[in-house]
Image (cartoon, rainbow, N blue to C red; front, side, top):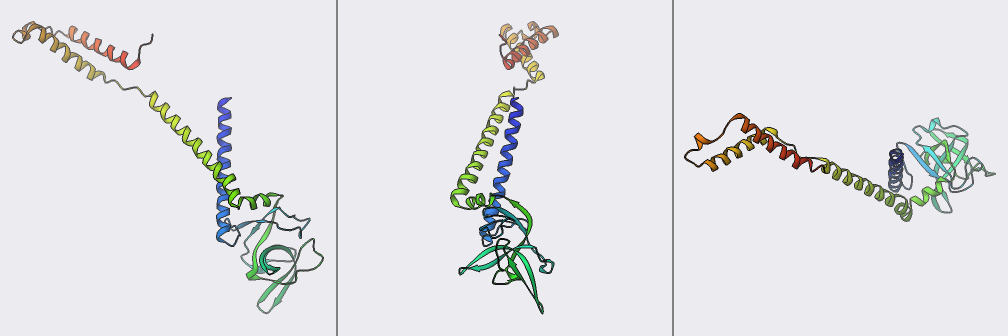
Length: 244
């Protein structure tokens, strides 16, 4: 149960991180492109009025796509474009209700679905930002606007990302400590036997004296093996610890 819960928490953490990174990219992208976020040609837009109701409403998030060829635009397409309202250049999203062709110049007459009359100014190719893809997420536009503010970005993006990385750092440190604690020194049996033989011979030589060491030292295979075995057992007890 604990293992399954840990997996669920890890998956949710990575999903939250991915969303946070995506929003971060969109926020910085919009800051470099006159407030229009662009991700691989797709642009999330926040609806600022109810002029297109009931198609979408104020506060909704809609997804537009770049227009490669304005000749492909047709009547009833919904486009986002730059226009002047009350002396300010703003984004507007309305439906094409007419196509105007004058020589090589092409423009569009637009109108909001909730408006009784057409927009005053025609829309030219240079004004068009993108075409609506029919994707609408209710209410998410308001949340996106909040995330674009410094307060929203700090609370909803930076803090969760910082917490995520701290948790992952903690897990890494705990794992590292566990791995180091589980390691036991490797015992070289041959080295232990060699040292045991040397110590045994040295002890015998010291007991019997320098002069008669060669005659009185017991260097039988049995005695050497017993000494090596005793030394090896002692080393194994030291490495494994006292089982009692």
